[in-house]
Image 1 (cartoon, rainbow, N blue to C red):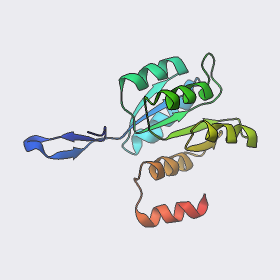
Image 2: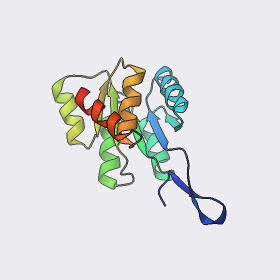
Image 3: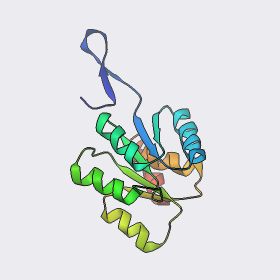
Length: 149
């Protein structure tokens, strides 16, 4: 059963909060992401490094991962490669980073990133991308956002 559904009384499926994993070595960014995503009703887990994130992904199911690129130890590219090569998680991955040159963005997409957001970011933009990727927009909202992207 997908992580966003659970069985209720009498076997009926009930929707539960979609789970998002945020990975960034900057705890201020993690706090901001948690705040804006939880306000929208998402369940948020956070990790400050790639190693902890890999363990979390192996233990839990997530609907979306938001991943920083520049982290000590295992960086975001290495983590993304491990996620995609081992197929431990098929969730969309949003790269959230200060690195915004074209080669860096292309590298992220080639490794399996679904979307790329650069820092500093606007809260509304992050929410729009999350809702778009998780299918939480109405058809008209989705079409309007696609015109902006």
